Image (cartoon, rainbow, N blue to C red; front, side):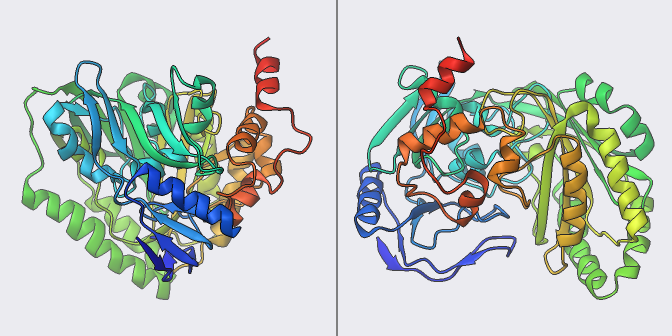
Length: 455
């Protein structure tokens, strides 16, 4: 299906574009035809997922590809736990799609609105030092390159490309299928409780190493962090899900409805924010429940916000957060949104924020009607001092020159892009900024760099 483009906006309302045309292919072959037609017309072309990235990574001024019809289970092997999905499959559909096979994602983030291709291509992750980001679960993928060729990348076909393709920013081609290594369906026992922020920071390394999944949220202007510890249990373990009324009160009425009102009021009268934050601190109570993993990992969030997240060395998290806290106090800012802190295992994907190092993640947010620029810029400076790498789908100001400093395989990735998309058919203004605008150049070829790195 081809249509004249209407104005597209992302969820965070940080990006908008009116594509020249929108196409909705229903097969890999239709994607090939769309890419070839764009090339013939001299247009750039990009797929778009759910629009949950806060950066312009999915902005398509030329041809926008809607992959909603490339969705669902294509193949499943229960014995190996490997399932092939259409690239446009939304994460929130996976529990129902995978239930007949008794399988689940090994780890998830706290939002499931993204498509599987969008989530993996931007580096979406959950928390837990035993687990990498979602892209680490990819064992094979099919993509259409900038020349319209359909290429399979797997452990047996072009395996040297997997570390680039798993987390490709949409710069290497249009993913049409991904094969995931899944795990047997499991239950999570969740304990959520408020704790003194000082104690949480002092015990950070011990906490993240002692449990399966640990994260915490801290509301600026308070002394308390809300911690969440998840322990993995077998799929047949007894479940103790949250009651419908309890979940509605905590996750819908308070976390969405009341919080939306506080954010809106804080925009007009910032001075009320510390008061409300202290009320939240007083009213916070714990929860103890157990359910199938997606129901514990994922939280419904309807209050619109903007976000910046940085990955830093795991041990640096306490000091970095203390610096952010001191910054907020020194500037006298009124911050209504909590700061989120998580952790992930090191992995081998070239543009993963956790490439080669165990990583802690610090995410800051602002209500979408507030001006986030001064706050985000100052926090970004702190994160960069700690060797930070920005989440590709969340707001930041870094460029190819600065990113090359923190990604050892950055030029290897660019060499693969030169091979798969020699005319930069899949580029856009955001990718021009973070990857550069010139293919080829003086960089060694991908093969030469790989040989040099692995003599």
